[in-house]
Length: 108
Image (cartoon, rainbow, N blue to C red; front, side, top):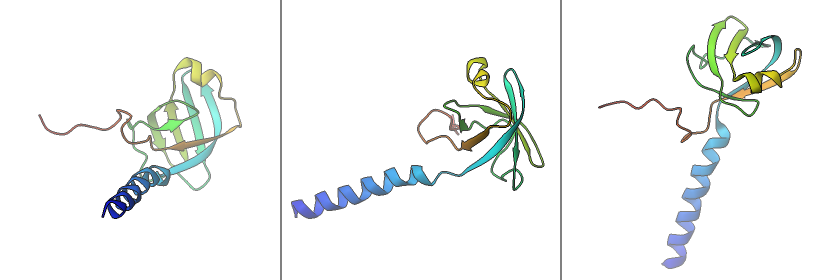
């Protein structure tokens, strides 16, 4: 019985940890870097789940989506993070992992 409970606990833990690896993501080429604002051009067009004001995970930071127009997505980074991003580099962007404080709390 003890062995079965341990097996179920390990299976549930594995399932919980693997769901973070399935977060939606995309990559794009940097077309413009204006200090804090970085514009990406996405090859297939902007993903439908990317909305203005949402927080994403990219380049070791948590940028905010400033604008989405067709294939272009504009992100606002801190000045330090944006300084490390160069023109024409490919940048991978994904949803932030759950539990990072980017979720919207509903209710009172």
